[in-house]
Each structure stands twice: as structure tokens, then as C-alpha cells.
Image 1 (cartoon, rainbow, N blue to C red):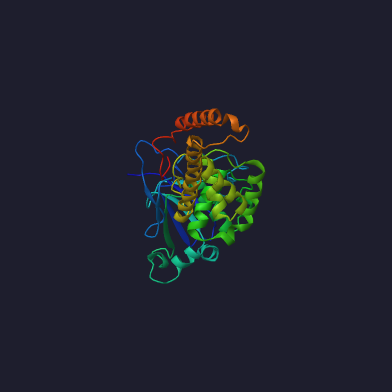
Image 2 (tube, one colour):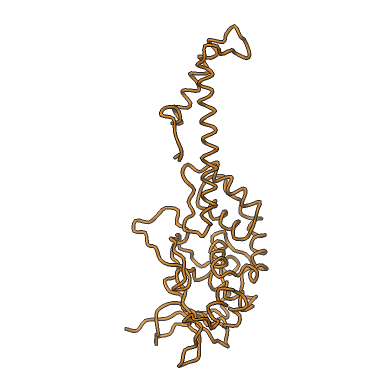
Length: 309
């Protein structure tokens, strides 16, 4: 059966073909679909597992899009295999990424051997976002005019996943600094616990934005009503564990203080700070009001315990 293949010709002096299979259709899923699908990420045989959400529709060139001059898709009918093909240069890959450098060196990886028929390297990748991967390849191959100067939070998070996996923070630093500066000027960190807050948490972590990371994690601690989720993003487990521990500690401290106040108001020896002659009435009023509010917040009886939900 004949089908069509998508080819992105990043360079003309191609010596390597990367085939992106099962490109990401869902990224950082907030609410799982009815039939969630988990696929391996990254290069086949060395990938990470993670579920991902919202398809990212390609946007106009000034925001997440790419110029169409050199990246028009060539749709061929004589197909060697399904997937999105990237024509690239191994030298650029190895210089920009330590992971590609390891793969393409002659150290036993199957990818480090050229094909006997055409003398090309063949690499496979899986689950990456197509547009984010194009951006990364353009950076690696110094195609500066093809690289957008502004990215959405969503696309920057997708690029961040690639930067993390391919270990290429230094080679992408110039453009990530540009994107981050514009993102800071246009997109605020949410004040509620939501998908965008987790995306900010990831972007701040991978690009070492200490102020944004502190604000995002603080927002998660304050506003999350359950355990913080990583949405399949490669946020280190210890980070989410630490956030959840601090959240539990904060809630536990508040609950303990409220129950301590209940004991204080119940105590027959309670003394009103404003009028000691009205201590009984004052204690009853505070006890009743606090009990009512705690009951409405489900922290009165039974007394909640860790983990708080």
C-alpha cells in the first residue's frame, strides 16, 4: 500500500536521517482522555515513558510557527517507512547534543553505523512534537532565520522536554533566553493551581529560572487541593515529592492551630483578652464560630490526616 511521507530538509548536505514516529498529539495532559495512551519518548531503545495532551496546532510564524521557505513538506509516494523524516547533518547533531554525540560515536550503538546502501546514518525518535523538533534541528544547524523569536508557554515547555532529553542546554541557550524574556513580559504565572502553573514549573526548572520556579511551586503548595502532578513532564520526582511534603506540612500546621484554638476556647479557664468579665460568652462565641467554619471546610471531625485531599 502506498502512503505519503513527510520530509523536512534541514540541510542539503544530509548524512543523517531522523525518523520521528508517533509524533506527539497530546502534551502534558491535565485531564486524562477516556482511553489514555502511553508511549515511549525519545530515541527508540533509550527513551522515557510519559503521557502527554492538547494537540498543538501550528501557529503563524511569529508565534511558534516556522518560516516556510526551506521547510515545505515534501510528500513522497515511494515510502521506505512511515514517520516524519528529518534530513540533517551528524556533525551538527554531535556538536550540539551530548546524547546525539554518544549515539553517533562508534561505541556499539546500532545508530553509529552507516547504512551500507547509501552511507547514511539512520536514527529514530518517538513521541516528540513535530514543530518543537523542527525548532531544535534548526538551532543545531544554525538556521537562524528559520527560528521563531517568540514561543508560547506550551511550545517552550515542549522545547524544554527536548533540551532535557538531548542534553543541549548550552547550544540552545541564546534562543531560550530570547523566548524566556518575551514570555516573562507577556505571560503571568497563574495564581491558581492549573495546567499552566505546572507548565511554568517545568519551564522554570529546565531553564533554571529560580524566581519563577519559587513562585510556581509556592502557588502549587498554596492552591493545590490534592497531590501535585507532573503531567508526564520530566520534572524530577524529588521536586514533586518536596512540594507535596511542604503542602502537607503547611496544611497540617494550620489544622493543628485551629484544633488548638478549639481546645483553648473549650477550656473553662479561658480568659477573654478584651473583657475578662465576659470570658464565658466570648469563649462560646469563638468556639461556635470556629467549629462552624471548620466543619464547612471538612477539617473539624474527623480530623484530617496526611495526605490532605
